[in-house]
Image (cartoon, one colour):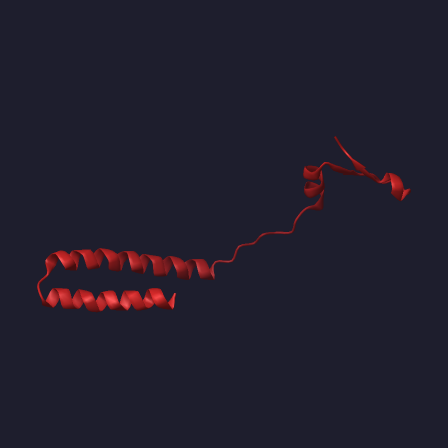
Length: 84
């Protein structure tokens, strides 16, 4: 993000220079680019501060997708069965 802030600062300098020299077309172009850079900086700050809760994985769903079934039999050799 420091690079983007550096670009933004450079655009501000270029904008002032273009205004002083009366280059209206360049002023408009720089203002558009400046707005896009400011929007990108804000989006990056928001994304950086956002926390995403992923939750705990549910083993029952994972085994169901894999086609593995579990039983409650005490004999371990018969507890794991492959379905399908």
